Image (cartoon, rainbow, N blue to C red; front, side, top):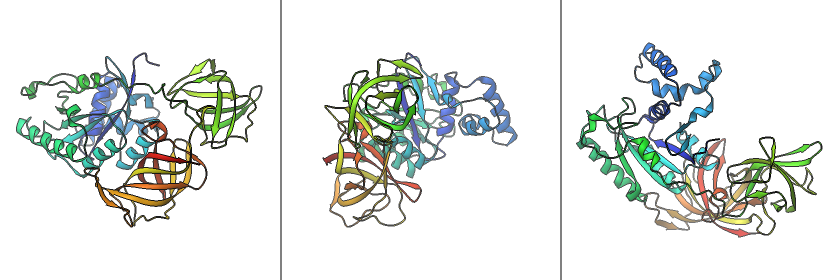
Length: 421
């Protein structure tokens, strides 16, 4: 592991605005992809008449490369700056982005929004910005890309900047913290080094902006919340639940409670990477053994927490959701599957409380009859089986979820309040 602090970074923006090229360029400039690999892509891109696509190829070809046996592993989704090491929450498609953003492991702290200078704000730009705000992204760096295409025109840059600022105001994103940078991911302008081509710009490069991001505070002050991924029986030890510590600390000797199974016991051992440790903190993947708990007492989807501050089991909960896609309208009584941390539980829409204006977040309508794709709303959900969720304002890691139905992600949401059972 790196001794630098870690940041999760989402790269968002409209399709074809150059996200992959920017990611490829960042990996290249930080030495995460060797020169010879880029050369290989360059030849490949040229042979396909796609000269200049080599950086996009870096990202797109990871999967294919693995099939062909060239060892580029997923660690190449990480790169280091002087101050941080970053994991890129790559967002190939809109839907994957949403799913990735919600499944905790890749909860991005900050985002780079890529907007093409020759195209400006496009439909997905709007959606991604709104989602980023709904899902709690703190800082936004706006990369106005493809400056080479518009001859590095300052007027065009200012025009796009104004367009994006208007959009950010509409969705109430604090624009004071947003930094705008004119770049060409393709040519490398203002990525690692200040470009002569934009002599009119005197701000930071992309890598400098990434270095200047605020450091994430690890959620150790919150109580322990450890969603269980699997439960194993290991000879000589007994029952071993496995999961990732989302908040708080897990220590040997702690009394923990598993909810909603409602069993508790004392932690005998904590293991990480096949070594016994005394304690584990946020982000650590652990296996641990609890005195007196059998394999059939707990299951995936349970959450471990301190016996004196056990995880909250919801009778109903109120949530703010954004509906990305649904073939028809959604009314009270609809029962899709909620994916929250490691749990998957069918939940019924008990009531649709408010429809929100997705641009401003203001209440557009109280108690609407239905909601549909594109709407944002506040709803009350009733889990069909016991489910642990926490208000996102208290424990964000257990406060976000995805709604899935018919094999796709229908909506993203965050928990506002929980009515305990």
